[in-house]
Image 1: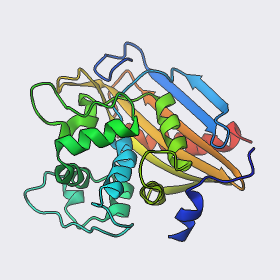
Image 2: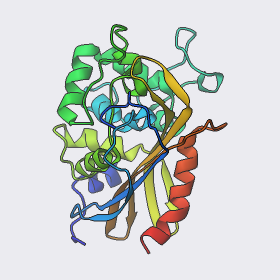
Image 3: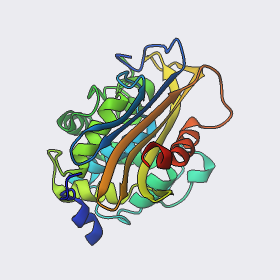
Length: 266
């Protein structure tokens, strides 16, 4: 592997064609790239089909939030939940950027997009080159700021997820390097054997793009990167099931990937 580490790592140390198409059969993909060279190390399953990112979108949204000056560091801003914010009871609490990523708090995402406004939000996503770049939301509902990434208009494939993450780790997005470093720094951390893993889950369902979810087709994501010494890899795992599940699929996908990573990259 290349000996030089990514541009932003020292900074961190310092401080389907659309998701509206129904998946006729269960879909599974695991794709892992060498983070330095971009060489494909593992690519199994259907990895070029686009689905809604759901909460994995919190990673690019963090980059946008820091670039726009809405997010400042790992603890700022700390916003209070109030009765005007729709959220499950578990999220009725003060939340900062690190907690937002760790606990996957949707109302915090929506406060960021509200402060951005539709024009700036759409422009930033387009500049990132993230998936199909479409955050317009459900046609005719003007809900891109609240639902654009939740099975409405924005879609991305596992191949595109790893390409985006590799650009982020190289400081190669068209935004301030500090914004990219902070977005990476607040991602939840895990261990997988001798690999240190940073990653974000996403859970939802296949949808028709018109606001209708197919609840018998749940999907789960786990995307991020892992480091072992000088080795750095970026990864995406996607699973789309063909039957209802009682639990959110993202954490299930994450635990499976963490258990398997040491054997995938011995």
